Image 1 (cartoon, chains in turn brown, red):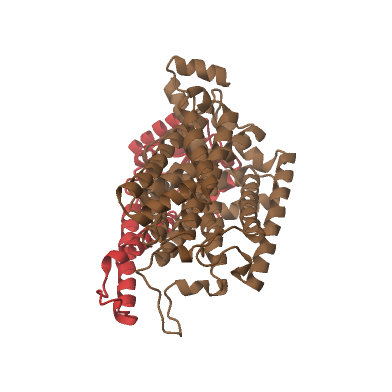
Image 2 (cartoon, rainbow over the protein chains, first blue to last red):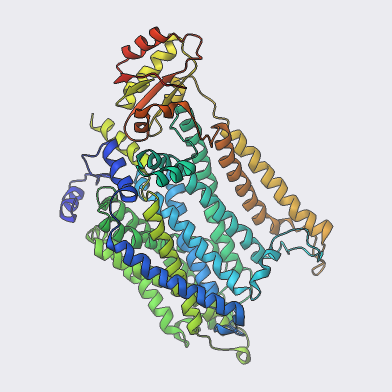
Length: 460
Length: 169
């Protein structure tokens, strides 16, 4: 369906289709599994994977240099001891949140439109959390001692401090990664069985066969499967909220003006979902074009994601407004100065770009024509991605650079190594995404069959 | 084993088979079909109880881990505040509850479904690979007390199936 038809359909109050008409169980199965098994790999894939792999090499180089020389190669120093690493960590974790929201929360709310985008947004979650996890480790200074964060019977006779949000973070992020992995893998099992049955060559047949673990679609298995999947969704839902809440505690529990704020948990969670949906759109729009999946990832999906972005963007905007208001209303000199410094200090340009990208540009989503205009959605999503990175930069760096005593103020800027690690992590993320779309079904095949079934039942 | 082209026919067939008195049977479908497991006489999944047990273990174990470390094994007096400062133990307790419950859900699902299972007789049937594409199968096992080679074949043919096959095992 093209945008003009979509516009007409919306005018007459008809909901846009979740799957274009004319598909059967066989066509959805064949079309999605062909991307992995039979269709020649498009040139786009080789170029994209090649480019992102170059950035992976840059990441490896930067990390190797970091391990030999130490964190002094980064721009961090006193007073700004948390620089790019923490900004990137929060940014990546936030991006991951949309995947869990789409797969778990929308499942509990019975939103059928999640079914063609859940698989790759879960993969996105997994890879984003993997990228996020890199940063605290690289930032440790002595990353080979990272396991000191876990409680284990050590010969040193010491234990972690469980009253510290930084230790909570370790548990939150590692639980989040594990649960996302379980959720993703459980969702993949039936599709791996489909690939096993479709594969004609020996090795893919064997590899998918091992991963599918002998799944045969038994009614009894499906019954348990659906129950387990539902419960996992129920577990993942509070988990996703808790993860970014704990991340926000890293800041909110500290006393630094600009960090010490009770609005942080909800505002961080909304920001996470906001940036995550922007990333899902950034990935989905090129993918549906290159692999001609417009039948499965329809305008309705894009429009719905635009609406979620608008809604969460407004919550984030409320967070900005409240931060500013509370700074003034508190009557606290330091809080007031923090806000003035953000708006008119040396980093003011970042604040205003952030306001432009996160607050003003997404207001275009109020217009229906923008929500069904694919290039416009893509542009807005890119803006939000950048805006959310700047938001974390403003929170982390600008707050630290000027706190209580002017004699302790200092400026911060990232060095070439900071940028190399950021670019490298984006390369790692994209390289993993490219590998994923090459070897695993990027759309959940069995859930598409369910959609076909529902569509036929409805039309009868 | 009988083959069907749509879930409604399979569901009707499964209900009739159950009414006929067959008990040891299974159905194979490319996506979950509502009511099918109930139709062949399977009701309780057992999964919720497993997940609940996992959650309780994670919750109690997680809290006790922190209590034991902070109060018994490695107490640190910070400005005379209580050693058992339980509110700050809640986030980790919560995370571990979710973690252990999710692990129990995964391994409980696999264990109850007897997966991984590298070999199963149904895969001997060439057409069975369509069970992951667009075909629906109903299988009555030879171990069923009512099973009779001829009579069962005739019964399966009578339920509007697309074809009836014998599965080697």
